[in-house]
Structures are given as structure tokens and as C-alpha cells.
Amino acid sequence: MQLTHYTSKFSPHTFPITVICDGITNAPNIGSLFRTADAFGVEKLIFCGKDIELGRKSAKTSRATEKYVPFEMNMDTLETILRLKSAGYRIIALEITEESQAINQMKFEPKQPIALLVGAENFGVSEVVLALADSVVHINMFGQNSSMNVVQATSICLYEITKQLKEN
Image (cartoon, rainbow, N blue to C red; front, side):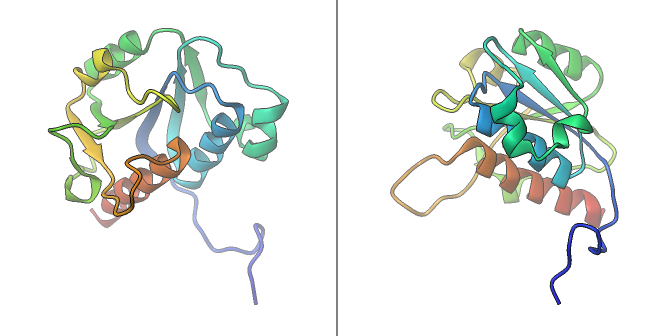
């Protein structure tokens, strides 16, 4: 028998993970990031940049998770990263670069809080903040395209990170 939201046996857990969204403005993506953050027990979402609006379109895809997933809005991604770095967060940028390594090759320490930095739909993580990352990771892909939707990519990364944190 298929389980419902009310009969599933998943136990709630919050991980020391903050997702920093660098310039993500697409309302359905914003809503889906709330759902993803809830599903993976993320401690907070931080939306950075201008023209970011929470409204009917993002609420439709969030399925009300924006009401209980902690979040903040900040114009300045650079300031956000520097603040989290000074608080002891390990900054992990999700971007394909010459030095990036596959997410499944990265080792995550359960005691160190993580800030996963994900980039705008069309531009990725900006070069200025990418330079501040402690590590840069990518998702191995085997098709013709070299990118995927920001929510899908964030979900894959959060799955790997939480899997490792849960095992340790």
C-alpha cells in the first residue's frame, strides 16, 4: 500500500546546511527550492540578489513549505558568504569549472556547517563569489548538455551531502 504524507515513517531531521541562492529569480524555481530544502532538512535558504519575489507563483510550487522553512533575503551575495565563512561554514559552490570535482568525490564532515552556493538559472554562480568558495563541485553528466535545472542540481547535491552526514 502506498503511504501518504501522514502515514510515511520518515523522521524529521535538520542538517547544518544553508543553501545560498545567487541571483535565482524564477518563481517556480524559488518555490521548488523551498520544497527541496524542506525535504532534505536544510536549516535555512538565503536568496541573494535583486528582483526576488515571493508570491503566488512561488507559493504554488512550494506547497506551503515557505511557511516553515527558515529563509532570508539579502541583496549582497558576497556579504552573505563572508558572514557565513566567518561563522565557520564551509562554502561549497555548485558549478562546473576546470578545478571542480564531482560531488560524490567530496567528503563532508558532520561537525562543520555547510553553505551550498547555487547560481542563477542562466548565469550560474558569479565569478566574484565563486572565488570565495572553499570547494567547487559539479554533477557528473553523461548526455550532450552540460547543465541542468538549478532545483534538480541542488536536490542531487543535497542528497549526496545529507547521505554522507547521516552515515557519520
